[in-house]
Length: 281
Image 1: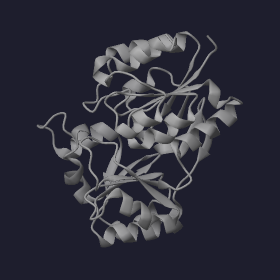
Image 2: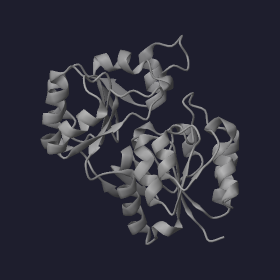
Image 3: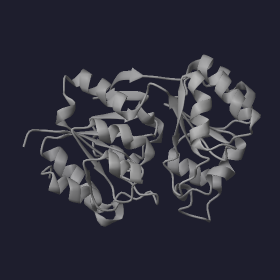
């Protein structure tokens, strides 16, 4: 078959929420690469948060931070950050409501002190109850620091690509409406368990689909030659944009509705099954 450009979400698609890459998925990645297909990570994670065990597969590029950071063959194609102007009113609003938050940057994460405890209820950070919460978070998302000086975030972290929040006093729909005047948008949390009062904040005109288009333009390629695999709320545009969108059975209902096909659960060899069904391996 003609070589395809394959876009993979990470959490819930390539790697489960126990931070495990199924052996069948690893085998399928190697086979697809050997067959000449291009492998691209398309994730809500920033570059610094990519698991080391994923890097060994030699991905050709990344659409990171939910579309904010686009890299192809080691070259930066696009990088969209909040900047101090947008970050200042956002942080002021979240500080007024004492909302725990994680700021994602290409170099690492920045957490409010209360975010360490607040994030601890999500499955991604519960793989080893014997470890201190801060250690579990660092193992899950890579380099990070805890900064108690919330009032100075805008001045210090204008390079923020995406902001994860939880324990908000409003659901994600109300949060999204409040953010619209700032040119920002709120997407429901991709973490398990689902939580209406947690989510991801990104630039309003940035999405995984927009980042995919930037990467395809740099490649001189067309969306018709793409296949995307995802499961979460921030995958909807990606699944709809791709030539073929594949949702995991463990994914949210909206992801399945946006996709062209639904494969098995991540822990039931779902990714490998879909890649075989599509003739990629």
